[in-house]
Amino acid sequence: MASEPLPQLHKLVLARHGATAWSVEGRHTGRTDVPLSDEGREEARRLAVLLAPFVFSLVFTSPSSRATETCALAGYGDRAEVDPDLAEWDYGEAEGRTTEELRATRPGWTLWQEGVVGGESAADVGRRADRVIARARAADGDTLCFAHGHLSRVLAARWVGLPPVGGRLVAFDAGSVGVLAYEREVPVIERWNERPR
Image (cartoon, rainbow, N blue to C red; front, side):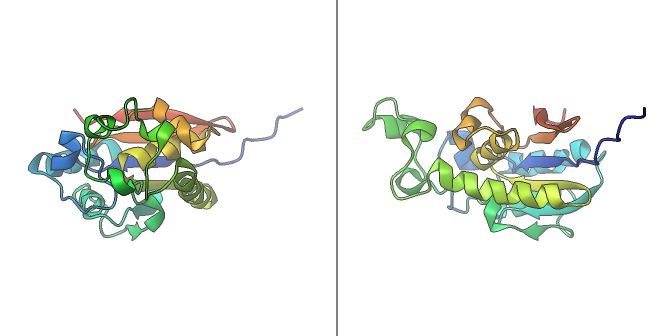
């Protein structure tokens, strides 16, 4: 008896924008539109090497200029659709501050456990991530998203069925790529935090 062929399951490829002055300093950069640094623009150009083997049916980018410029420099600017769901976590009162600065008044603070005042919760970000995943899973081919560190970490967690705070388990550097895929029909993180050499 022949086995049933596996359904065609497509990949969700995440590209984090290149470095900015704030990302280098470890500042929480949610809705502030901080531009790419010279180093970040070079990282964005080098992403094209990692993305070249794929054929994408959909390309989305966060509305921030650091993401849209990364998208353009990587060679996908003419195809990308801006998706507000890919915006970085709204850090509220933590915006522009480092973890060390925040811990001066809240010892042991982490975004994942304590959250932020005046911004989004992990559950809020998770709902946005779920909408992105639903669009990618409904696509007729692989999907590419240019986005941000924390948002991408939540996307990875939700892809494999973890709660949004599961994103704390996967670091995602500026100018890197992650591939969310399937092993047979099981969602997996196939590759993560890859940077062009």
